[in-house]
Length: 195
Image (tube, rainbow, N blue to C red; front, side, top):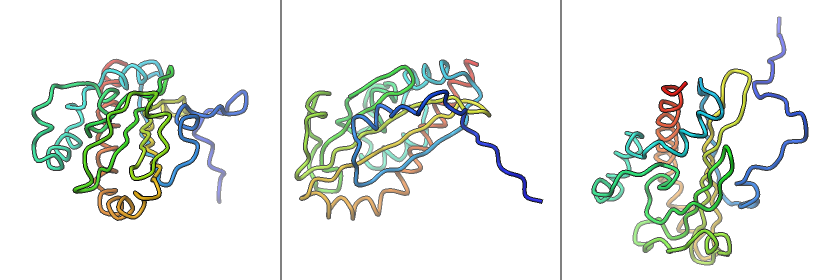
């Protein structure tokens, strides 16, 4: 006998509003979405998004150290909400009660050069040509079973950056997925300790 599977997301009372990331990056060339249930309130998870240090994401920290040849181990500890996945050049470009969006622009592939030094408005105004523009959302929402914690990177490739980035993404995406999972685990641990 097949029983219907109940929805795990709390039905909205009104149409679903777009996320901050939807507003900042409605179009994209690449995206991933990773989620994790957290046994804590939305408020506790939102606080953990803002407070969890990147150093608590052990696997992300280790993979970043490999990628940066150890340079990342010499930086001061700071929250994920300020550093993103630790790549130099992330800047906070938007914030709501349960979502933070970080932005990055540059050429992250080998020999691509350093990231662009942009503030939030510079990132918003950027129309990429020979760089990629990345938006990384960390957000949480109510779900029937718990609070759902999500990370959702979106990437827009400039026309001159598409081929080198597509090759790079093909190689690094599995590691990027591991980093996102590590970030989610760190935030979830902090929120559940506070619950």
